Image (cartoon, helix red, strand yellow):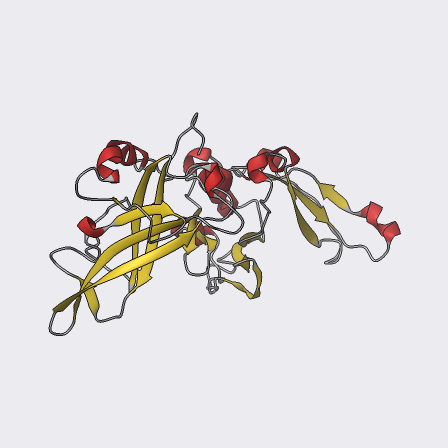
Length: 326
């Protein structure tokens, strides 16, 4: 929407199928020559354009640009106008190219008078006789103000929390206002990597004095920007690692795994739940080898086989009833 910084835009269409259905061998699940797209206030007066095939289609005009952008590591998994030859878990996702400058700032209204219309033909085979059928799908998407999600920009915010928030740690508990001064506050503790030199250390004499409260404060410089005026911070997913002893080989292995920006993704991957609109952290096998969710069974030779335990404290913006891998 910014002429000085144009962006390629696309629309993701998703639908489900029955367990007996598979993509038709001739066209795949979506016939590319049938994909049409338009932007208008009424369907009857909309002027449709070929999106993936045919004369003067959108993809042909911008194919080189799309392919270059899709090579970025932070780009979505599915390219636009991809033939769908496999259906996983009865779920089909198809990206429709809109080209450059398809939307403008004036398109978005609170009442959603303007719509994006998409038409395409779904072609499927049905087991057990492999009978083929086709159906025309017509979809309408009203345009309303809802923020802008730009791939790679969102990835930067995801991997560097310090750009959007300040993280503090409050240690201790207080029953009265007079006891608040005795609490320990460690400010700006977030980091992109695990740095032993700047690790926060403290000692406590009881469970109550060791109570830790995580404080996530929005960065005022970021949230004062016009593009972020409607944004909020949400604590989506929390996994904590608990060490019995930080002087052994497990701690050194963890520092080696998480102590370098070059190892981004070595300890955690970010998994997405499309249906629930959530994302969550998934420890890698390398991290679980150091800090499993469940303690390993002691043996005669190894009395304490797990000096580090991983615990999932939050998932889907809600506390986990029984902290663990679920």
